[in-house]
Image (tube, rainbow, N blue to C red; front, side, top):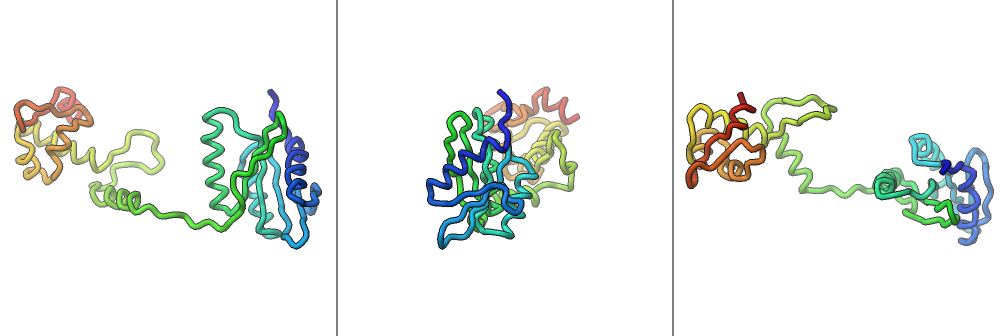
Length: 216
């Protein structure tokens, strides 16, 4: 199935706006679609065959004309398409843009959000998690932008436990916590996230062969 052209979006979007009582014209002063209704500010719609940086740049530029700027794109296909589309809706909200999708087989237009000022909601939990990880992590062991393995504060603590066990042999979690300064030593060894630890007796943990090989 060929990708729809931008012009294929015009008729459905025009019909949708006309049902809302607007007079609609295309290609007015550089805008793809302009709609006017008595006593209302102009509505501007930018049409594109898919989300792109160019589309967002054009739509943001139209905000110099009106506060009521929308982007219109073909409706997504499949679950992965919806995930990408949903992410783009979030981006448009942050830019103060409205979003329309057009179902190309029957011209159905769906409104996903209207233009409005955006105020991001802060998450105290996520902020605390970020700050906690920053403070706990020793040094700067990673390279920004990497797509490889990330050295976290948790991994650094696990390595500290494993190194101590390799040097001193199995011991109780409480003793290991005191020796290494890792307060959650027992919990971490019981969880055994990396497969490095094993319980050799009740309350006493040692290293697995995997642990020995991966920290050596």
